[in-house]
Amino acid sequence: MMRDFVFYRAPPATFPRPDGKLKAISLPEDVYIKKFFQKYLAAKGHDAIKYNIPPFTMFLLFSFVCNMMEYWKEKKEKKKAYARLKQIARLQGKKPPPNPYPSAIKRRQALERKFVRERFSSPEIWKIVEKIKEERQAERFNGTVSGGF
Image (cartoon, rainbow, N blue to C red; front, side):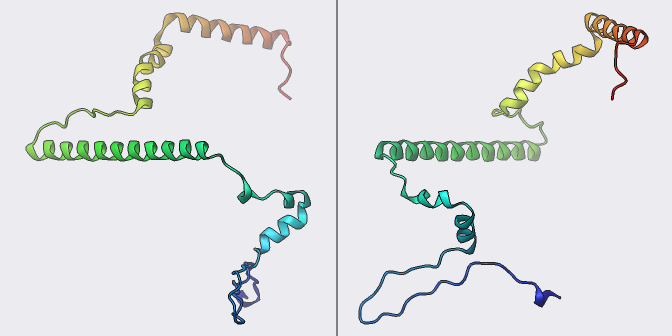
């Protein structure tokens, strides 16, 4: 059954033999690329490789990538240091210190947690909820709401 299954992949790369002088290596086009260009003829004129990027833009991009790599490296070192600090505290039988580098999202959630819990216990909110329930019930009995279809 499996021998009848045809695998579609690009043909292997063929390299020309030297006839006295070396020719440039030419790789066959991928099957999928050929099919794409057959389907979308307008795309043939646009080659993704031939973009002319100004040197200043390349310099900015390179510096941005370098800064990000430094940031990630520093962040990883801080995480390792805190993990080691927790390990030492556990070995000494002490409570581990709080994380000096908490997630910004968790910090924001901690600030909002009070307001989230307040929704369920606030009398003003309960009054609004009861008012909405009464309005819905009145609409149901008056027949102003459709059957939900």
